Amino acid sequence: MEILLLVPVIYLIIETILGYKRGLIKSVLLLISWIVSFVGSALLVREFVTGSEKISEFAALFEGITGPQFSNLAACVFLFLLLVIFIKIFCHIIIRFSGVVSDIPVVGTLNKILGALFGFLKGGILVFAVFLVYSVYNGMYLDLLWDKMPQVMQLIEQAKQYLEQLWSMAM
Image (tube, rainbow, N blue to C red):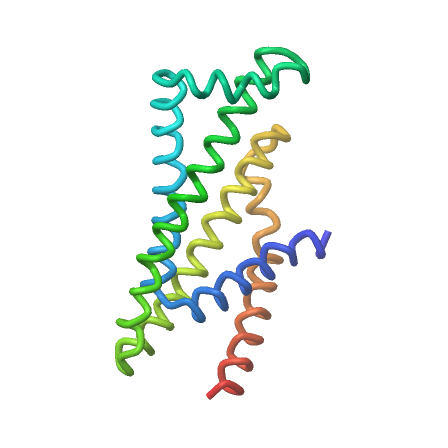
């Protein structure tokens, strides 16, 4: 059971370190780029599927596998993933230019510290969401999660001490 509680703490540590390395500006831009990629691709796939006959031609390649429903689904998934990749590449080009701002000494240090905080918060939100879905899925209530909170807080304190040791060694 303690290993199960250790996994979210390790994930929070990893997200905090990644946030520190990336900095706040790059971390926020990466999050925005993922959101833009998925939302943009979902909107564009809808446009392509409803207005294009080429998607039917592409779907015909999958026709012999299991039928028309699968072929249309496969074509939509392929197009969606292709659009996500293209939009992510475009966003990545924009994000590369954000590194110029973080090279300024005062801004760079603040950017890294705020990036670590952002990474910790982003990881915490994801861990909370996973616990929430898990508890709802299993029919448990959130108050049962609070019973284990002292153990989680103890692990967080241990992780905090470890991060402070790493921080002191880095400086």
